[in-house]
Amino acid sequence: MKAWEIRNGDLGLHDVGLAHPREGETVVRVSHVGICGSDLPKLRLPNGFALPEPWRPGHEIVGTDPAGRSVAVDPLVPCGTCPRCATGDIHLCAGLRRLGWDMPGGFAEQVVVPAENAHLLPNGADPLHAALADPAAVAIHGLRCNPIASPGHLAVVGAGTVGLLTALYAHQQGWKVTIVHRDGRPPCDAVAKAVPAAFRSPATLSPLQTFDVVVDAATGADPAPLDLALRLVGDGGTIIVQNAYHPGVHLPTPLRDLFRRSIGLIGSFSYCRRRSDDFALALDMLRSHAAQVAHLVAPAGELADLPTVLGGQWTRSIRHVLTGHAS
Image 1 (tube, one colour):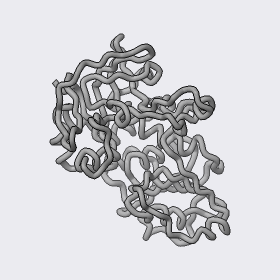
Image 2: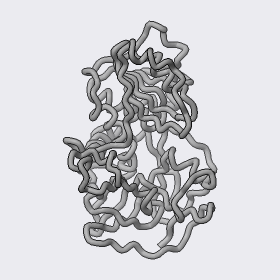
Image 3: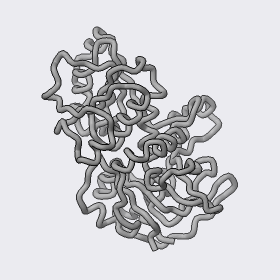
């Protein structure tokens, strides 16, 4: 079969052996695979990262199982035996592996996955939309699994895919949502139709306007998004950090302010299966909000078109999804 892999620092479409599942595993024939923003720099400049050798990316996977049923693949593969796994906090499992990183991913015609990680799509779900299940699960986890106030006023810093899906989920839970980012307006008309939120730039917000909860879902090359979140959150409020800050980025704010203002600062990594399954909830949300989600995702080409897609125009607000098979 064909698969995109980075070998010795070079991205290429290679002939690889067919995937053979072991006990407890299944083969998924890939029909859709999303290109995550976290993949982009590694795909474009692979020599700048410590990647597995070879590295087969692709963790936002939708396809069909051996019975021909449409499935979305949860890319988190925990050990299943440690205390964290026993509570459902699989994202904190010390032995956690991830499809598309530690394990071969979905930029291929087929991928082997644990059978329990292949979720049947809800009736009526669009496979293209289901490619957003991973970022939607990240969005849900941030608000579902952390101690925050009852629904009130919530701000999202950043208008990328995770930020927009966070806004969609927060609105579903009863929050009044404001998205704060540099331009202060929807990134495009499609996003304006999709997300039930006000869009503001930092400059247009009154210094007196604060929020009960602020979700930092921006791009973490510098500490500016978290600095902004600290400005926006009200005393006694909570900041949820979904932003995967780059290594070496530090928070320069006086820590006494966190203490004096009784601000909760919570890191929210990935997603879990505590009491419920964030990934399954994400699939349900994507199905029930299909009209909105349709504006947040777009087919970008066939799997074989990956280099062309990487070299084209890019927006963090619309998830780019490769469709079909490499051959």
